Image 1 (cartoon, rainbow over the protein chains, first blue to last red):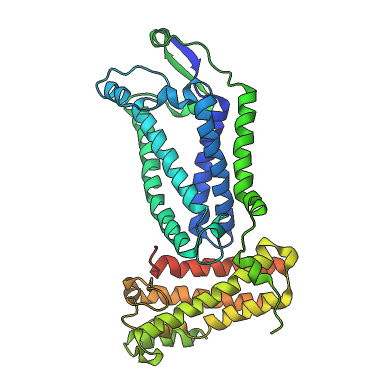
Image 2: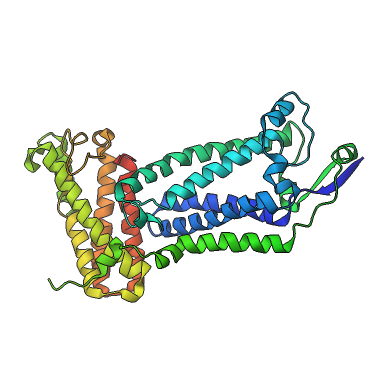
Length: 239
Length: 153
C-alpha cells in the first residue's frame, strides 16, 4: 500500500528549477562573453536572490525545506550508512549534496560580486575593493566553477543512479511536489499532510531577498557612493 | 594591417625580439597598451552600454580610434621569446603555451584587430545600437586571447 504525500512546496520547487536554469545560463553567458557578460552579471544577482530566499526558506519553509529537518548531522549520516536511516525528504547523503551545492553557488555569487573580466565587466560591488583583490576573487571565481561543475555532475549522476538502480524517481516529485511512499513509512514518520507553507512567510522571504538584490544591484552605491572609474571616464576633457 | 601583425609575430617567433627591447621592456609596453585600451573600453561601455543617456559621439569615436590604433600597432612584436616570464609594471600573465600556440594566437589576434577596426568604423556613424553590438564583438575578441594564453589569477 502506498500513499501520496506533499513533500516539496511550490516555492521550494520554483527555487530549484530557477536555480538550475540560471546556473546553466550563467555558464553559457560567461563562456560566450562579449555583450552577454552583462547578462552573466544580472543572472548572478538573480541567483543571489534565489540563495537568500533558500536560506530563509530553510528556516521558515514547509517541513522538508527546513535545514533542521534534513541537516546531515553525524548521527544521521552514520545511521544512513548503516542502512538504519528512515525518512522522506533529503536523505543524509542528499543533504550533504544540497549543502555542497548551495555553498559552492554562494562562493560563486560572492566572488562574482567583486569580480572583473579585464575587458568590460565589473561586478556590482567591484568599486568597494581594489583591483588586485578583485583579480584574486576573479581567479577564485574561475576555479570554483569547476568545483560547482563537479557537484552538479554528481547531483545528476545520483539522480540517474536512483532512477535505474534504486528504482526511485527523484525528478517527478521536484516537479509536482508529490511523492508516493509506503503507508508503513508514512505511519512511522507520523506524517501530517503538509502542503501549506504560509503565504505571509513567503512574502516575508521575498521582501528580504528582494531587498538584498536591490542593495547589491545599485542600492548600496546609491546610499554610499564610491568614486568609480567610469565616472572619471565620463568627465569631458579640453585636450 | 593583418599582414603587419602576422609579420611581427613571426619576427618574434624567430627570436629576433630585440626589436622591442629587453624582456621587461616588452612586457611593460604591452601592459601599458592593454591598460590604455581598458580606459577607452570603459568609456565606450559607460556611454554606450551602461548610461546611453551620456553618449557623446566625439568621446566614443576617439575611444574607438584609440583601441583600433593599439590593435594596429603591431603588438605581436612585444611577445618575444622569454616574455612569458618577467615583471613589467607587474608580473606578466602570459602562459608559456603562447609559444606553442602561435597559429591560434595569430587567429585570435587578427579577430581582435578586425573587430577593433570595425568598431572605429561603426563609431564614426554615431549609431549607438550598432556601436553597442560591435563593442560586444570586440569584448569577445579580447576574451579569445585571454582564454587562450592568459594566466588566470
